[in-house]
Amino acid sequence: MEEPQLTALEREKERKIAPGTRGERSPAPRRRGRGWIWFLVFLGLAAAAYYMWSKRPAAPKAPANAPAAKGAGGPGRGFGAIPVVAVKARKGDIGVYDDGLGAVTPINTVLVRSRVDGELLSVHYKEGDLVQKGALLAEIDPRPFQVQLVQAEGQLIRDKALLDNAKVDLARYETLIKQNAVPEQQLATQKALITQYEGTVKADQGAIDAAKLDIVYSHITAPLSGRIGLRLVDPGNIVHATDTNGMLVITQLQPVSVIFTIAEDQLPAVIHKYQAGAHLRVDAYNRDSLVKLASGTLTTIDNQIDPSTGTLKLRAVFDNSRNELFPNQFVNARLLVEQKRGVTLLPTATIQRNNQMTYVWAVKPDGSVTVRKIETGVTEGPDTEVTSGLEAGDTVVMTGVDKLHEGSKVNAQFAGSGQGRGGAPSPGSGQGTGSWQGKGGASPQTQAPGQAPAAGGRAPNAPESGGRRQPQAK
Image (cartoon, rainbow, N blue to C red; front, side, top):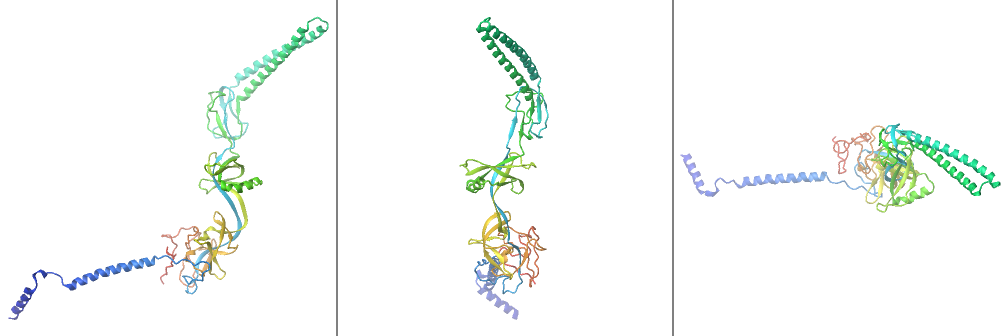
């Protein structure tokens, strides 16, 4: 009897519930779903904040006059010395160069032509041969000129006989004139006839010389020493003295010149040295300026500046004994204006720059580092001249500067000596070469000189782009 009563009560409760509220969720479950949404939003914000915190930029390095900072690896932290690669400043020589673009230009180039008309019988060279001055190159048929020589010699003999006969008659007339046997006009006519025959004999001699010269011209020889180009006329062809194409081209290669340009602002120093009689050296490099081809001497400075480019042409002569330079070859010319001797030199990779100064990280005798302001001069190759702020023998940091602070203790390893020495990156890269393994100044593990860094652009355990050291797991 109790079960039907309970059922009736339940039915009574169901009738009291509004018809539109059936099947709807209770307020408690709705609040619980919203809580999950806010939890996920909070979790995402926390992850973004951690990511931004881990990638924040490193604190700026202290200037030279700032007190020692208690940063990573600095005093007061209880860690070992920071491994770095260092070098010593040294005394040496460095050159002051003016660079210019140039081209190899032969001093002499000859287009060989025939000076007589005739058939080309033979050639005595091969294309590309190096020939010496006076070497026989080709032969033109000399027989027509030999015939002309014989004719001229016969005419000379005839005219000489006439001249001799006229002289005998003149002597006879001179005797008869004293006896008044002949008129004076006849004597004068005989003298004129002798002069006429003398002129004829001279003309005959000229014809003989011309025929001999044509025979010489029929044997074509090299007018200078050089390299022969491609042949322009083949044997069997009739050549003429008026041909414009010529027979072959000879280009002088030893010596050879390079014509290059320098800016007009560089001219005063060059003119001063040149007029003082200095023999200025010029080095010729290939197109990439990586391979030195030859060395020569400046010989000529042009007489005017090109107003359209503001440059001046110069000519340097090279011995070219090994044929390193070829006509019309493009070269990069480097003119040595001055050689500085006994100056302080430092690898360019050690020099750092910011908006205020140029500086290096100098290593003190106690093993700590400090910022040293310097002044630089000439840069040539991997070396830079230091004019002030550093002396020969001073130790400066070359790689690993991104981990340094004023007063940091370092474990300096000199580049190129012993295992684990790092190579020199590009100036200002700040890329470290060693890894810090634990406490107590354990020996670092650096990359070999010239070896590429590990994947990601950093050496193992090197600082990230933010400049912070990542602690190692114990």
